[in-house]
Amino acid sequence: MELPMVQSTRLDQLRGPVRAKRHNARTIAALTGNPGCDRRAVLDAAGVDKLKLAEQVGFPGSFGQSRFALSRGNAFEAMLKADDCALLREVLAASSELAYQDLGADHDDTLGDRHERTVELLAGARAALVDHPLLTLDVAGQTVYLEPDLIAWAHHGRLQVVEIKSFAIIDDQAESAKVSGAAVQAAVYVLALRQLLERLGRDPALVSHEVVLVCPAGFSLRPAAVVLDVRKQLSTLRRQLSRMASISVLIDALPPGLTFDLSLTPEQLTAALAHVEPRYAPECLSACELSVYCRDEATGSTAALGRTVREALGGIETVGEVLALAEGRREPSEDQAEAAALLRAALRLRSEALS
Ligand code: SF4
Image (cartoon, rainbow, N blue to C red; front, side, top):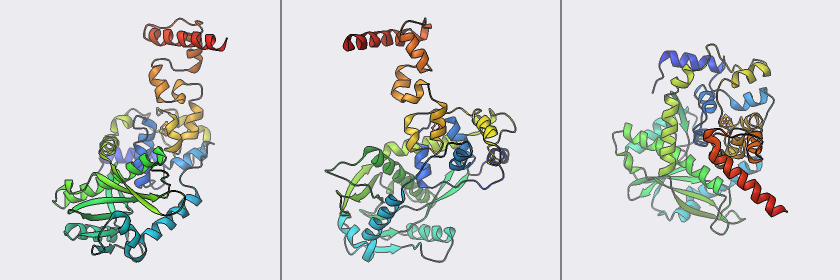
């Protein structure tokens, strides 16, 4: 999907004279983490490097996987894929007869060539375990290349995405934030595959909404597979991508000449950020490069305490106001009356419990 020329020029202005930061499955998945945030929507649509922006305004954060997690993940994936995916076939209960097709990260060719090979392979109907496929997805007018860990075309002629992760499943449990992150990332691949099948004139429903997550079981690297239904993640993702495609309303409301050009001073960039409404929530800390900056900015606001608190105290913006209403030092407005009564009752109960 091409962006209109005016909109694309405005996005270039917002970013400044550098190449747009490219998305990948991880960053697209992170878009769903806080779909109501205008600041993130604008910066991502313009391809601003948020990590560098955070550094520039004095709030660098450690973001992304640790080096240990990366090397553990690479070792686990290499082990699963060794000998034509012998171990992975065992975990997936895939027949040893099933062909293994490596579309080759090692080939000396461009991303476009590899994508072409993926399209050619998926246009046919041969059953195979497809390794190193390269898919594409449109994100705010930008074509993003995506590399799923593997596509298993094995289950009754349906395409199934296999996502390999290095976090452990212990006693059938894994950290829920990590599992939901993996589910959203897999949903990105499902969406890209469905769009590809549509372009090929094939039925997109051939791509299963059930993805297979393969993780180490316990503290060893012995693999285990679980099936995740990603229908919910798919619909959030579609909504967020269409919001980015219709970013023009947000952009039109920004002051003319506003830019996040990284060569500006920290003060100028901080002032520019103030023009785009954030929606900070503690979840931002694991999903957005600007989180340390936005958390600092949100200090003292009820929003910084999380969505549940923000929703329970709707209409009361700051912790100071909450305390004043609870202690009766401030008269509530009409729409704060209910929350104020609850706050006074909560304070009374707390005082009784403590005395
Ligand atoms: S960290 Fe800031 S910019 Fe990022 S999603 Fe949260 S509020 Fe929005």
